[in-house]
Length: 389
View 1 (tube, rainbow, N blue to C red):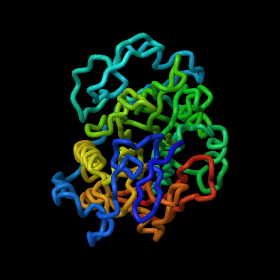
View 2 (view 1 turned 180 degrees about the vertical axis):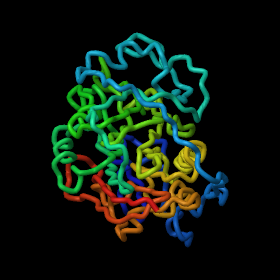
View 3 (view 1 turned 90 degrees about the horizontal axis):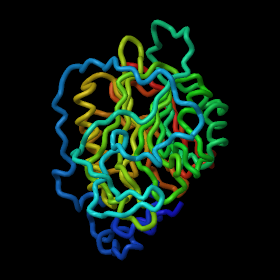
View 4 (view 1 turned 135 degrees about the vertical axis):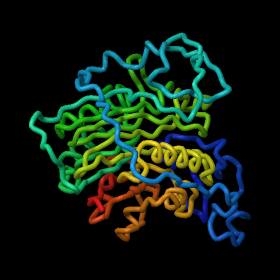
């Protein structure tokens, strides 16, 4: 994985994707950050217009949770049926926002396919299933343990599954919010990573495609995305397609179909259902001008689907400085930074940067940690224990 160097105060930061950064405003793209950083701005985001930081959380009360249950039967572990070569429907892939066109050498199709949808938009999840036992309790605790992890395309899937199911700080989690989870790709041994974790923990799962990768082996699959795995029933799952983003389809090194997404679902906690969101914001965006719009789109969906019901928003925000607008709008909307509450705002990425967050609304944070000794991804797994307020 190549790191995109942001070059702030000599700091080299990894952006959470295999991006070259040539159009992202990074140092090796020819942008001189020296004069900007030498000015007394307080923080890099000071260069942005004030309205970038503004967000209006206007809803009050609670929106009733959805009772829609994802498909009960998961697909087999076999990857003989995947997105490719039958990509004749856009139903499970977000619109590809690009002005570029290309002929795909594998399928022979002209890409991207015609698509009249506008974003932001919600689409069904790409895959779901349940390995939950039959004897589920009628009531659920008011506590919830959540793990969030960018798994770097599940390229080290066997070791990662072992960590998630055997590490004493992670194995007893109730919910896992995961990003860069591959499905049927050559990078992860042509396996359904989310399904495998759900089966291992006897849980339910939903998976949503972020990108169909055009540069890796994909005769039967080759997509990557977000996943939610839960030892409690999942309902109301949907995939939100974001609007602003870097044009990955036009990339020479990593052409992709699809878009940045956030995956949401409902999990029972106490006498209510909590809306949980698995996040992976744009990496190729220096100051956060794209990511902040993505955060606002998430918050719009959060207001519409839950409002003041308890919520958890976690994952890879690719926000490399603490005053970034994509983080500030969450604070403005009343979400609390769980690890700030715990007093740990140190790195969540191997290059010494904090890119990953757990944000909560309606919970008290009681414990948590970042497992910085885990080396099977470029990001570290995080866990938090929460209690309903």
